[in-house]
Length: 340
Image (tube, rainbow, N blue to C red; front, side):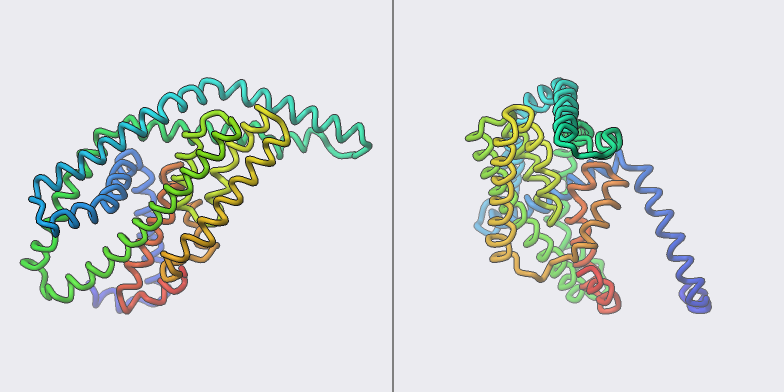
């Protein structure tokens, strides 16, 4: 097989690789209903594995350590469903009312500008800069989050099996790999980098969510827990994730209280994300796992197109994993550098 590939011209190899890439992408998009729970399970398992291994190193029996970790996951899941579920249903049911209110405010703003003598195409402005559409997109995002919550049992079972498999994976690699030491070193380098990234990013995302929830609660904006959860999820998307997470809360503040509260809401998001993203996170994360802003945006669009809103949330972790995997191989380090 390798001999046949070497006989191909560079153009033919490129076209063959591009065709294989298209087939793989089409397969992932067709299987998104299966792929989304699997990737979410993998994401949770990567975060849960370090506490599991820590307990085992401390002498806790494996079965007891698994029960403690899985029990913690279940408690957190129930807490999230309890806190977010009611707000999610309430927000979805009130979404048409919010959209109508935003349309009325947009019309009033256009009329106010016209009264000042500003001439423009009012219909074009309301078509291309309609806040109601942005609130509608937020509603679709929340519906996708609700669909994920309905698959919680399947995700939990998959996480449990992944954690069991992670405990025995190293032993299997030692017994069946051609060069166990080299393979173990490569796997350890990849998994440790991914775990480090995920643990630090999850911690800073949780801090961002708590600060946002507290700020919105002080401003009396509706559904602060829901917007805190959204801030937690989109904190995994650097540069533009905080903007996406802020839009629905800012628009809701506009509907509830007017321009002044809207300004304070936006300022709160700006301050929190600036401190966490530019001061706290770089102090622990460093710059070794950084991605270029262009790659972040492209990965957001790419994974969002394949997997929907969940793909947007997972876009950077998936791309970071790909970058670490490429960087671990000498032949593909150039591609990893291009992503940086």
